[in-house]
Image 1 (cartoon, rainbow, N blue to C red):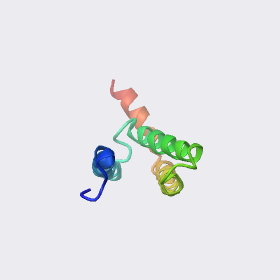
Image 2: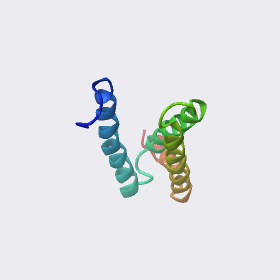
Image 3: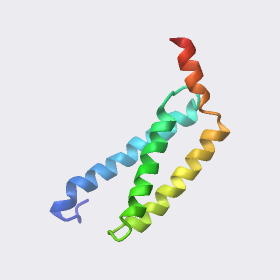
Length: 97
């Protein structure tokens, strides 16, 4: 981040630290895919929303690259969600309460 302009350093720091957060979320989901109710959906919402926003703001810098990277992430996460039957975590949470 030393080469980033001063007006972008906070944004780039946030982005860099967000990679750690999302990697942690995927690690949690890989260990217990049906044990975390709402985490899959929150992740899919965020990545889906960013993807849509990038397609809407197509003419902005980095929009095209970010759109396709996050689209790949959304598709692979959605496939994992289905293969793991992760929606069943809601049933477990409802029966525990």
